[in-house]
Length: 126
View 1 (cartoon, rainbow, N blue to C red):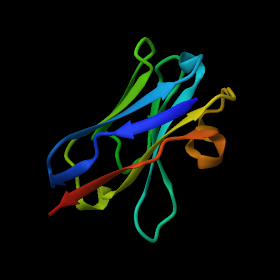
View 2: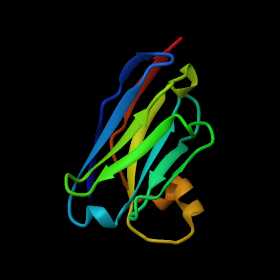
View 3: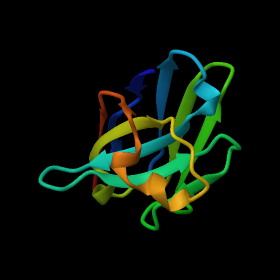
């Protein structure tokens, strides 16, 4: 599967921004779709994921502010970000994991994901 992320940009603190990730290839609905981010000088960190049953999990730092959704007809996954903070500034990546596990904690690790988009920059100004 190939992933293409879009929607990044410059936004003021407190504002909203929605990222999209378009997938090509078969069996999109079978993938767990994750979002990660990487700030300069930092490791890539988990933001959230949505599984095949539309269940979601989020990092504590974004819980209550970010929402992940998916459209298995259009083969897209979105990351709606509200109440953005300067510390949310990073390159955001969407990723797809094809190997299913009932242990949701596994999907918080980048190594679980076999496919990655190219990343889209989000900059939050204070």
